Length: 383
Image (cartoon, rainbow, N blue to C red):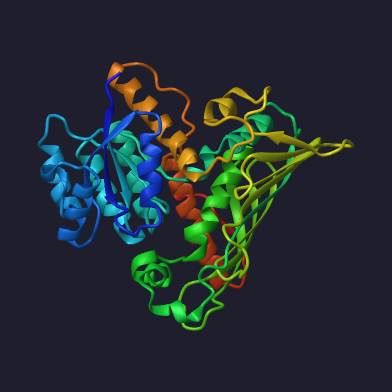
């Protein structure tokens, strides 16, 4: 089977997210890394791309150069990943979609709801994929949770508790650290910092697992480190369209917490709990019975979870393999379209998911400014 080709914008040397994408895209041999514009400094980006094995004529100085170069090639890349600061996502993704490329965008997909609606429409009009990297939904036991909810193991879902809290931005002395500063600057991050950076991962996972969408919400926001314009802590209450009640806490100043992504789902017949720092175990408590531990890789896992499990039971599994499942999902969708076949069920997060997240971000920011007033969290085009 001939490999698809893949290109990356951003995610250069020293990036937090770049290595996970490069590892994840390579795991299954579906993609070869063929083109890149990795740094806002053209020479540094070209040099780093060449050090990773990219041919000199496809090691680009910026995304516009990459768009022009790849658009004119018969062997242009099949998928482009956008892993740049938030404020640049829309312009890059729009340009590549308009040129007929499939795109995977880091979250948040854009910085406004209007931009996100534009990408949804473009994806539909061009027939090209616009996916969003909520990569943690690639974990096998997250997909196990989704399957258990869908087949009715929990009965009606009553309550969802979602958390994504860490303490890595708690030091006020980091105010000028460029890897921290941009996240709290409205010019580069948009209208939200911590909720847009981490909270929407937890919120999307709540929808991914339960099959329900957020309809309305109320938010309490705080900037705990002096001088920050945008929030570094958020508490959000929400209601979902299937009747579930939701609670979400996200923070970047919770000293002692490392990653802190957790999801708990409680239904009328049982409850599930999963934590990303212990990804191999899922706690399942049927009503009136003892808690059971579902081990990743065990016999009897649901098909979608078993297919996402890459290493034998009892061995550690991490984020790059979760990303690999997203890339494999995308490869299968791209191959199906190339072959003129029906696309497989989409487990990768779509532009529509990205749009819902942007609407939630806008509602959280507005609710926080209005002392927690309840607001409609649905995108206008979905109301």
